Length: 472
Ligand code: CMX
Image 1 (cartoon, protein in one colour):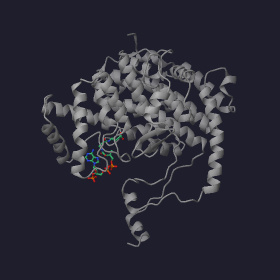
Image 2 (spheres, helix red, strand yellow; image 1 turned 45 degrees about the horizontal axis):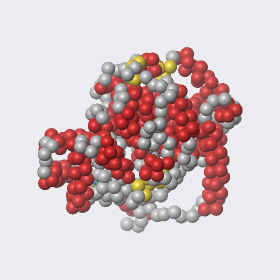
Image 3 (cartoon, helix red, strand yellow; image 1 turned 135 degrees about the vertical axis):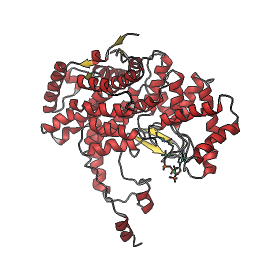
Image 4 (cartoon, helix red, strand yellow; image 1 turned 180 degrees about the vertical axis):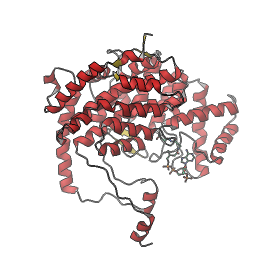
């Protein structure tokens, strides 16, 4: 496979200066549809049409129902992580406790069926899911191909970010490297630049959209640089203008198995969005509400994803599974496996990959990964272990009596698939989750700016004040 050094990928300072200059020109004029600009971005045109309609819809809805009550807040909700409080509007996806996620109304199986695929591929292209998330429409093959090309053309990393990545110590966790490098790319923010030059509020969405497209395009080379620096020889594979986003990512990571590329397409699609209240989505929305630019907002999102109760659980699951293999070997009995799970619980730890703050059934993101495993790696011992655990853990968690949801979530399955194709470096897994999560949280950020959502500032209270309020 052709390899190029990280430095080859970096844009020179001169080129960057020119593109920043162009960015300034664009930010000063009012929006001109792509067709008249002579370059491909029909996505932006589709989006603008949607926005005009949605802005009107929201304005009319608020005028008619602005004071209508939508729920209540209890003392337990305030101490209990605000579970169940209806306090956010997110357009891109809705999570049903029983059914799981729907992206703009489409379930995962529906997305797998309806979204465009790569030639010869069976899994949906994340580009299509992004189009769906941000516009609400299922795109055509041509529209998706256009997004792939556009992302490939925006993928160059600034030189100072390459240097930063190359200088990180190998002891720094990949997620810390990821979040830091994203924050450092803020130097490229078209939103920050336009804001500092006095851009009108009505144009915020456009600058946020441009940053979103740039940032999503740059995440695969950035993530690949972390991987290759930490676990390979520091050289990343060559990006090609003709490949889709996932195929380029797989190549840059150094993987040339077409099945791994298919896994990437599925993985990057299903990890993208989980409505607005989860930590990574909420963090992006919250920080973005201060008009921090998309780079800073997404860096904050990634700091949240790096927590073991959220995205880092995919790393924790693999650590836990490998430990069980070490302790039990491959010829374990059902009783031994149960004992291993009980030992985890009795030592005060959680069973990673199980439970959820909203879901009350098996996560459909787990199910579609399980189907992928049945198709491609039915005899893998680690997959068999995951399948065995699925049979016993829910009953154990019910007997344990604490977890509100005893069923597996997305993280219970992803690591096993990656490991099968040779990606054994589990501390890297959450970075892949993060690359995917950009599609959802940045789509929402564009809509936040289009709808003019204000600074987020809920009311907090002291226990003393709360006691007085409820006359305790
Ligand atoms: N194993 C053991 N105990 C669990 C548990 C699990 N898998 N899931 C929940 N519990 C415990 C909680 O720790 C809590 O105990 P305390 O009362 O002692 O604090 C109790 O059950 C009630 O928790 P809950 O209401 O069921 O769950 P929360 O909404 O508070 O938290 C989650 C949800 C995901 C953090 C929790 O289920 C968990 O820790 N799971 C394991 C980690 C994991 O897989 N996280 C990934 C989630 C998906 C993602 O974001 O990527």
